[in-house]
Image 1 (cartoon, rainbow, N blue to C red):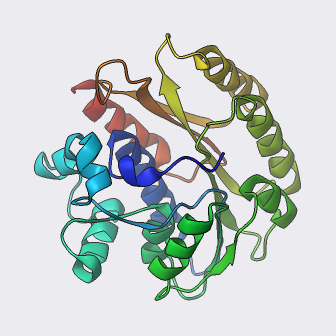
Image 2 (image 1 turned 90 degrees about the horizontal axis):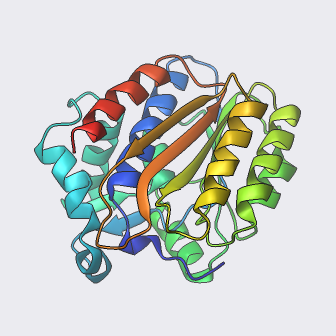
Length: 265
């Protein structure tokens, strides 16, 4: 459960999909003057270096955010592009924000930020990366903490559930917890990210079954899945999925736009 290191995958095509949707949601929700809560279950270290040894080893960022920027997937005023520009102005041209730093860049002083990360080294790095933004940090199991915090204060807000999916049982327990949190926090925007897996991956059927369950249980939710070539021969992830309860206005249109972009790969 503590072996996953996102530094090897930061800025990949799954991040582009996930972070573009996340930025779109936050951008819309911060247009109203009312404060909001932002929560994450699995925050990672918050800031990554795309010229680091980990990123160089996989090359996933080169096929992801580097390509997306070169091909102008996002207009300059897109919230994802704006957040990336802000982070790179502070941390260098090869910096890449994880979802906590991306969110913090788009949130306002009136908003609250609560982040969970269990891995000791990642947790320390997260606090360092977020030093200029504040927030409340929890070195605890993110799913349990999120369940305990729902509904948060302010009640208006967004929760990102983004596990590493290293534990097979998560494909059954995560949607159940998501449903429980939704019942406790019926006005909250609850977003779940998951990998789309190739058929040869042992847990591929568990992943597909989870998506079918989510669609049947929450027919009003927004499902966005994109496909892309595997990062290398035999790699199990062939796409990225987001399932969102109470999707903000405009998210469906952004999801459709991204789908066309990814379909052209």
